Image (cartoon, rainbow, N blue to C red):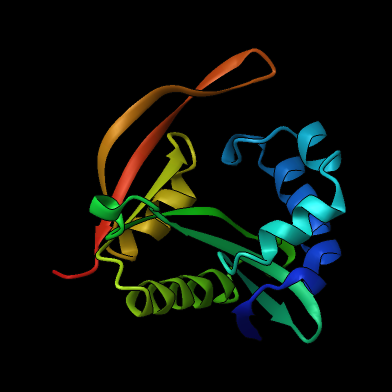
Length: 164
């Protein structure tokens, strides 16, 4: 397995994995399945050209993704938002998520980021345990963060300080 920054050339593979993720875990993404399916490939290429997305590969196959978006404002450039973060179910329990998280931490360090923030569905206990193991702390709740099929879902807001 390898982890690297995704590029425009990875757009089709990213799009397919993103669809898989939203189909499997609709509460883990802000965009609906229809929104993801209908995203033009050119838009995906542009987004991947920003360098904000990492990918985990098994051979040539994209099996995981992790976004890290640094805040653009000068007084908040020390912060970044993690997401989306997804590993194909066929590769759960094989260290892919940890490899992606380690790469996220390395990228954050290189960018001078001091704090990583994320949102996780309040009922996604597996993801919460993973984030807690990686030093994130729950600092808040976002009620009705998303509404999926008419059902409101709360998110936990989690933060990891990288300089402590």
